[in-house]
Amino acid sequence: MACISFMYHDGATGQTLVFEREKGKLNMREIDTSDLVDTSIDSYEMVLFDGGNIDGDCWKHVFFPRQRTHYFVYKA
Image (cartoon, rainbow, N blue to C red; front, side, top):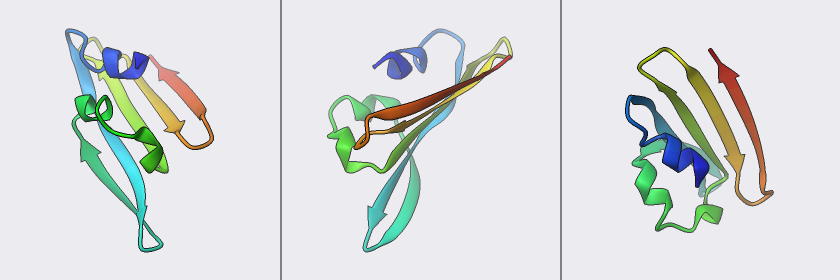
């Protein structure tokens, strides 16, 4: 929920990508971040928040829902 919130701050930039497996193939697609609130996030293999702001800060948060593990990378 914190990443979803950050993606909607004033001056926020970036996109949210989800990776899901269909018929044995891993597919990536961009989604509206707010769609994660009403969706079973466990249906995704991985969620990538590629965020930042207009001041130049950049960060990535990779989340693996089924394993409940995540990685955060901040790049100023």
